[in-house]
Amino acid sequence: MADEVKWAYLAGILDGEGSMSITHRGDRSSNSYEYIIQVYSTDLVLINWVQGYFGGRIYADERNRHPGERWGHKPINRIGWHSKEDIAYILEGVIPYLVIKKDLAQALHNFVITPMAEKEMRELAFVNTKLFSRTGQNHSMEVN
Image (cartoon, rainbow, N blue to C red):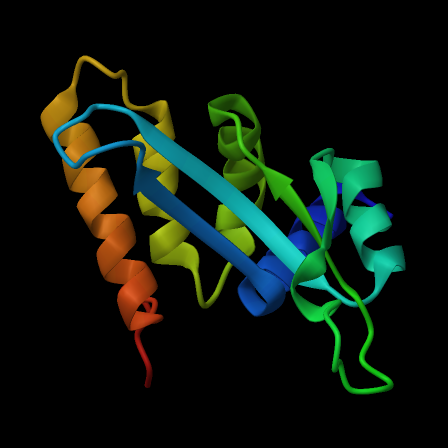
């Protein structure tokens, strides 16, 4: 499978089953943040495929493994990227192909590539990620 096709496929997975976020670490006045991209799936084959081509860390999600769980529910697995370098790499590959989460991805990318000394630019990118994740809309899309 060609690299371009793999990136496009990962973009589709992220649009449908992924999440991207930034949160303040500590209080709001701190300049310390946590950022993450994650994909959730009950299909471990998909999660392993993603890791095989794009790295990331696989987690078994324990939220649906509790007493009283309905019979037949599959365990949810997830893969995540946490470092600035990994997130920048993933976003640079998928942004051209994203449809639903393109604006959110661009805001997160701007955040991770902006030097820490540029606090105002980082804060703007942080605010934009909150705006785009709250609305769930791609504001750059035009519908004809």
